[in-house]
Amino acid sequence: MSRAIGSKYQIETSKEAQEYFEFVKDLLDSDVVKQMKNFRHHYSTTCYQHCLNVSYYNYLVCRKLGLDSKQAARAGLLHDMFLYDWRERERRQGEKPHGMRHPEIALDNAKQNFDIKKREEDMIVKHMWPLTIKFPRYAESYVIVMIDKYTATLEIGSHISNVIKEKYKTLTKRRSYYS
Image 1 (cartoon, rainbow, N blue to C red):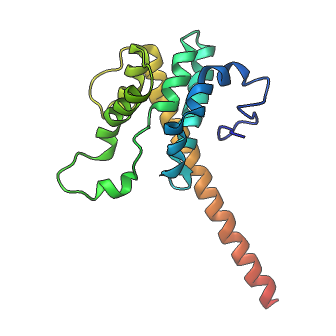
Image 2 (image 1 turned 30 degrees about the horizontal axis):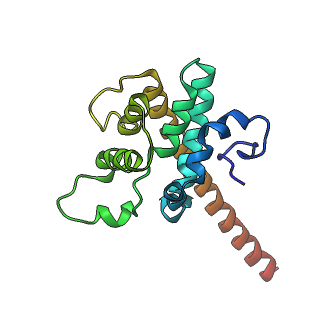
Image 3 (image 1 turned 45 degrees about the horizontal axis):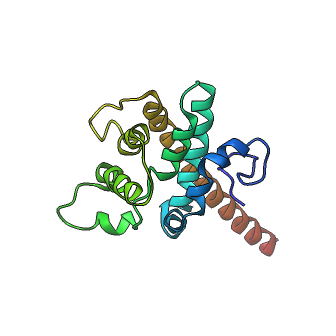
């Protein structure tokens, strides 16, 4: 079962997420999207989980604003489909930093595997704005810019929280041992 970080709803089975799931079911079932589970993105969050987080919250915000929530959900799930360990590629000489080049790579991968609409294309390729320099064209593209930063912050915060909890457990065990 899949769940966006911070959400209490299971994507596949909850009544609340039913429309969202219908919009992205074909993507979630595809082998290429499942490959994103093999790549770590933000500390302990996989690329798949990050994209699911962005997709779900992008869908919710765009739906609330009366924007195209279907394309927002789909673009969110594909926005970081770069399918490599970016930490390894960062070490290569002569390449632009990952943050500046991965939107184009993700878009190329998405186009090779799915029918991508113009609005989805703009969301995927411009989700790292202002690093991507060109202004987003659609309101949904501005939403994904903000949602991507928001979910990355949640994921990093979750990781830091888990590290602190583990350190606290270790300290507590030591104290009880010496007591």
